[in-house]
Amino acid sequence: MIKSILKTLAVTTVLAFALSTGVANAQTTDVSGGNDTTGPCSENINDWIIKDSSNTEIKNRIYANNNFDFKVNTGKNWINNNTTVGSEDPSTGNVYGSIVIANDANNGNFSANNNQNQTVTVKNGKSTTTTTSPINNSDPISSDSSNNITGPNSINKNKVYVESNKNVEIENKADFNNDIDVNANTGYNNISGNTSVGEVNTGDVNLNVNISNVANKSGSSYLNVTKQEPLNVSSNFDNSKTGPNSINKNELKVKNNSNLEVENKAYFKNDIDLKANTGGNQIDCNTTVGNVKTGDVSFDVKVLNSAN
Image 1: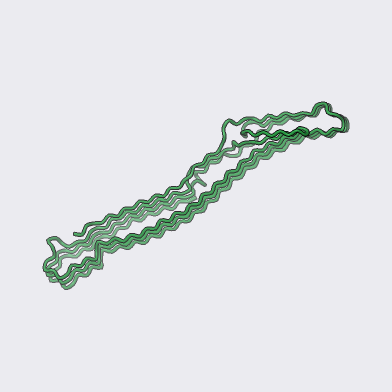
Image 2: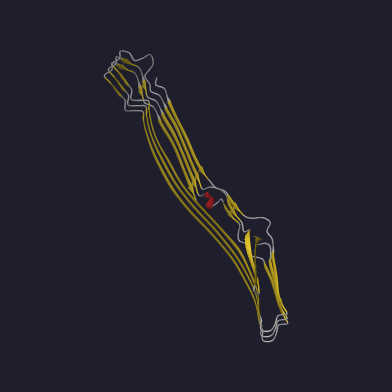
């Protein structure tokens, strides 16, 4: 009896990411400005610029190459020129194989919200002040501007400009190459030139192959990006007791832009080559030979490719 051979292989490749962006303790921006009792022919400007900008860029590139070559043999036995072959019937061993490959790439939870830092620039005449603080779209951005008792022929301007930009870009690339080559043999036995031979049994071949490739799930069902909420802007303008022939301008501009771009690319190549043999036995020139039974061959191949 030739001993049986057991081959078991398990390969797991896991490449994942989890990202969460955001800030806490958002606060309200409250800006006030005014021009009061200005002289004739003067130019008075109140200028507010509030920008909320956010840019998130993620690039994942995965290349996985699994290449396996197995050759298992319990056959190719020569039993020749014997008077009596053993007390037991000649038989070859069994081959059992289990191959498990799991490739998991670019799968994770992505979460991004709208809480980012804001830059506030205040211009009052020739004076400029810039501050940075957290911003939250749900909290109001308030500004008060006034021109009061201005001189004749003066130019008085109040401007408030609020801009919120958000850009999220995700690029995932996954390339999987699974190459499995298995050659299992319990046959090709030569039994010849014997006087008495009992039953001849070749072994069984049982192979299980399980391949799982999962890629780029973060860009679809696992992607959670908080929607861009409308900006809450409160602005008050006041022109009071302005001089004759003066020019008074109040201007409010609000922009709220959001862009989400997801690009997923996945390449799967599964090359499985299985070769099994329990036959091809040569039995000749024997006086007495019992029953000849070749073994069974069983393949169980499972391949799962899931992407995007």
